[in-house]
Length: 284
Image (cartoon, rainbow, N blue to C red; front, side, top):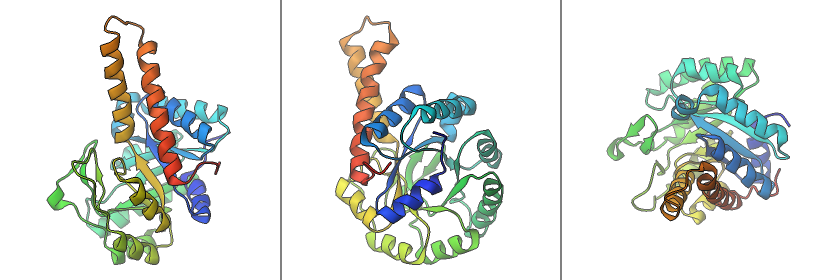
């Protein structure tokens, strides 16, 4: 089947009360692992690529890999740009075959964020591409984005209401205590803030920086309106930890397939576990 928009998946998730997993890819093995896990769970899935992933793998390669995966899949797949801050690249993704884009203007004053987001929405909607935006800042590191903990800002519910009203964006990423990268201590999520945001905002809510968030907290967030959950770090950990183990066990091995296959299998299991937590198993 053809790639679908993230909006299509999140509208269904909103009606069903579950979240769709959005998993970051950087190469073929990760794309294969995401799709294999979703197939085994019979779950809809979002494959997303950051600006760093596009720089590494190439936009055309990522689109081609995901189109091939979707062509042979029995579950719906969306291809999403994660944390797009470069307007030119956002437009390239829209033109190049992504079915959803995130414009991240969270570092800007809200007026500028609204203005630039609206420019992206105008172009994206003309191409049948769905949109995501972000309000508030997350701590930690996400590719080129580095926000110190003291500067990390929670999303203001009233600003979220204004932002969605003035843009009509399809989904909104909010800052409620998660962070990008690896956590030193389990995060403390501000559920009353999330509940207030959802009471004022009619579109699906997105939770970034969700690797390392306790399962029970993710389930609570879903019950309060989160419909898209981003996972990257946990996939990288599974891939790299297993690859290091395999190299240590087989120091003389020169066939990359024999080293990468166990790493891919490890990623599949991590992704399946997340899908089960999100409640999207069997929802394809």
